[in-house]
Length: 120
Image (cartoon, rainbow, N blue to C red; front, side, top):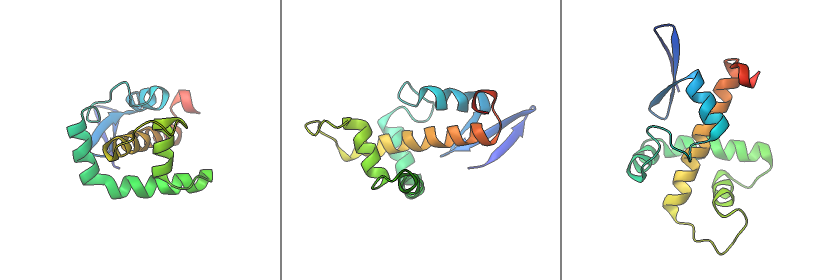
C-alpha cells in the first residue's frame, strides 16, 4: 500500500489499484460488490489473488483474531452463506470475497487514518 500525491489529490494504492480518498469513502460505505475498478471480473480477481493472496490472508486472519473469529477464510464463508449451510461455496467465491473484504477494510482504515470527514 503506497500513497502518492498528484495535482494536490493524494492517491492510495490497494492491491495494485489507485484510489483517491473520496473513492475510498465510497468503497468503505458501499462495499465492493456493486463494482470497484480492478476488482469486478473473476479474471481480474484471480490475478489479484495470485499476486496478493498471502497479504490478503495474513491481514484478514489478523483482523479475524481481533474480532475473536477463527480466521479470515471463515469470515468470508460466513459472508457468503450468511449461516445457510446448504449454499455451495467454491474456492473462487471465497477468494473473491476475501479480496473484497480486504479492499473494504483497507479503504475504511485509510479513510479513518486520513481524517475523511465521513469517518472522523
